[in-house]
Image (cartoon, rainbow, N blue to C red; front, side):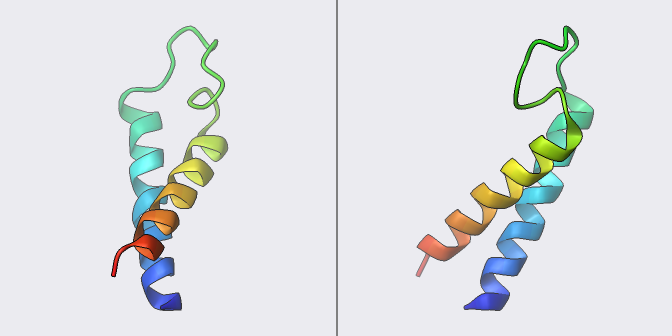
Length: 55
């Protein structure tokens, strides 16, 4: 169970950071994607939640 959560969090963090690098926020007004740390943590959280909810 914990391994599944860790894999989900790692995958979500990678996707979150990838979103920051590829899409980002050119104006700097986007609260979630203007900072790579916030985007990575948000992705990790969503990834862990999705991994934990799957059976």
